[in-house]
Length: 293
Image 1 (cartoon, rainbow, N blue to C red):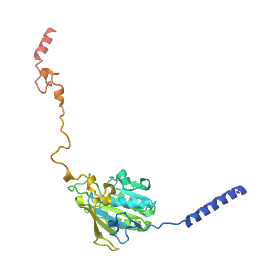
Image 2: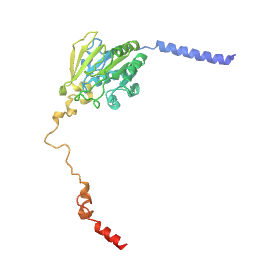
Image 3: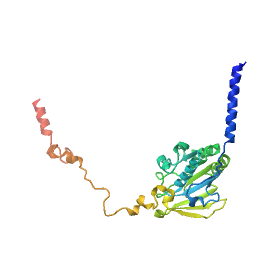
């Protein structure tokens, strides 16, 4: 039987736990229903003023169209609210230092890189359904290295059943599920936003599918709206392909000494034996040696 001292200790521990639970329940809570990217033009496109939690939102566009940057802005917004995020990196191209430069707290970001493409959707479903992450990003692109479509990035096309599982997981877990896809392999998000690069002018973001309104709305953003580090003008810190000087050589020409020139004069007749000159006949020498024996 338990002694009186042990009962007193256990009772004190239970009372401490009860007091801690009462303190947590009484503490004010911040209810997070929308993730605002901080880019006012993008947030204004959606009726809720940002990306709604509990839904799957698809960012569809070619490579370098701003889709990954928008996803990073949403993750950074969740980190400002002291929430956790997860990133399922299909192409395995997420660069953590660049994400940190955009305000992402790497200590609150779980990066998962499944070995097989078939594991991408399953991984995102488990993360979103857990309810532990405010934002789960699923990058379905194959990346530039594996693209064979003339410079356009390919992507993994989800089945209808996988799309429904992802949307259901986001709803049950209360997470924002961001699907990064390409036009050649669109996903099945409840809301689809198409991103397009406009060259030096910036990037275009358009709502092409929405059940909550805002369908057809479009915003054109300068590059410094996505990357504040570029400065007020944007183009001052970026060297575009059209701005490359044509007359001045950027890489100085150099002369590489060939290997045979280093050995010139050290071989037979000053050349490489058996290559640049024929070898002298050794028949007479061999005959003379056999005769002396």
